[in-house]
Image (cartoon, rainbow, N blue to C red):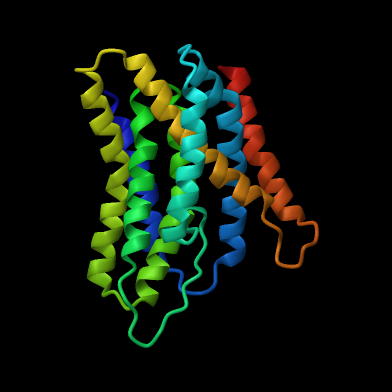
Length: 236
């Protein structure tokens, strides 16, 4: 087990979420750039690393799990309202209710993402997950504050969210020690995460800008994210 994996996954999420207390002004432009970068990187590592690796097992059902992961993410976003890719679409009323649907769907999403990390391509996948959790955690913190959740409770909920992906990794690693047919298991759980990544990354990349015009900064962020993934691919 590589315990170093736990730290970037936890810290990126927790610090991304708690930064909502430091940056109370609109960070829309900066978040969109980070989203564009992370979306491009996620899509690139999915195409270059994750899909080929999943099909190496020879399991003909991997495609079914990729499709399942894609559709499952669509279902999750009916409850999370797109916070996975940094969106906040809450219309807060005078007596706001605790957003249970958002919290549960985000935690499940994050937990699933950690499960394939017990096998391969850990560095690329860890970096990709850590990147896209920063704006997601910031958006979650914003929603919790908007819904009048007390600050100590916001911190506890962000801590819970930050523990989900490391928890998925640790559980999957523990299960694999007693599992027969580990290659098929990891290929299928990777298939689910691939489907999730495909939905998230394409949603980020194909969203129109506010004015529907060419956005040079976004394009540069996308090219940098893709370029880093390509460099890592050819250097491997």
